[in-house]
Length: 549
Picture 1 (cartoon, rainbow, N blue to C red):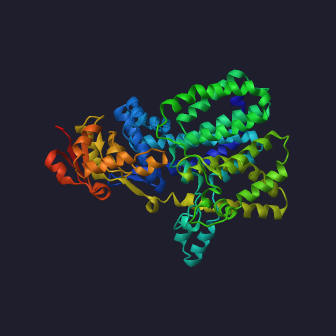
Picture 2: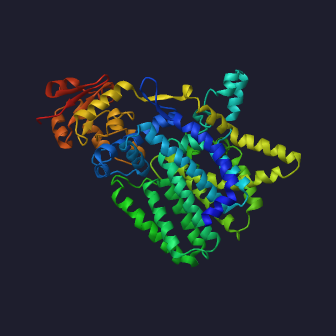
């Protein structure tokens, strides 16, 4: 009944969100991954090209190897347990298993999760304000996060004013590294390429809404079984998206300190979290993950090549968003007795913390926690803008200017990404797709392949077969120590004295030779021709079968 009442009371706002952002998602997602007219598997955005190869490979590993073998051997590195949250790719694997194509299995869940995200963020927004206009504006500000990059668009327009430049911007304007703009739009940097983030944010929004509701009501409306169930859902997020779980961990510990008298509620919640989350950290954490917590004051502003003051870095990357947040916080929320003020201040502390400490090998990944801060900060900013709008014509004019400055960089990029002629990238060409089909037909799904470590590797992406080592850039960012394995791979490819011994040690059954192995590993194909059978002659590679060692 409560859900029915909630939908009835807010149906106009929800319809508006679905009719605006929802329609955009319906247009956007089918362009993100597809087979082009030549049969090439193609991405519609550079970050899909960069990130989804891993996701497609993991999903196909589940399809062809089964769940338990993938848990035991990470598709990216043989002999290491899977440590990446896998739920979203397991869903796509199920869809492939029942007959959907790879694009369908990846795009359809993305559309569904995008609509659920609108609902989840709206529910969370109701904790901060009853004003649906403020919630819609906050969600819009969040989706159009961006800095002052639009200034460079105006310069480009001034240099070459054409309708084509105006309608189809020549470059991204929320991602200009050469101009110290790193943040990138919420969807283009986070929710589109990082598949786990989209579902993680859906679940995280619902969990935080429940926790904040309990906190606001001083746990008077909460029942212990509800706290326990919320805890189990929170723990499940460990299998979906780590950084959302980290964010919830930080804010819950902060709120616990403020309401320590209600410790029994928090203990029941923590018990629920432990029951579902602990198995992930016990069985799915790599032993190579060390202590990679380190200081980085100023976050990316600390990078030597920037030589940029902290405040200028954030002004360029978030524009006037932080100044507006501070103004609104000091004028509308500067009341420690207010539960909402306490929640918002908790995210201020998290934002400060993520600007001091890095929590994973790749420093930029702190942005995945900061994004949650951006969303929470969007409510004070939206409130301030709505207050300006209520003033006379001067206030309305100021509101229009502020919204333009806050969103225009992202509006340019969100419009640009719809132009697949400008943004499409072939991931796997038709010839390699055909070779992958032959590999699947002629080899056992559990046969171990030695391949190049190029991230667009057709063996790991399309066949679901295990490989010895995948893209080193991913392995480094996930915290794996692969130095010894890397040297062994070089020894094998170069056909050195211990090559056969190492082939036997790892149980390698097939070796793939192509141009990238010659470049990256200086592969000696004569060694393989002289000692092993040429099993598959692909258009772009040769695959040797390893026997009689």
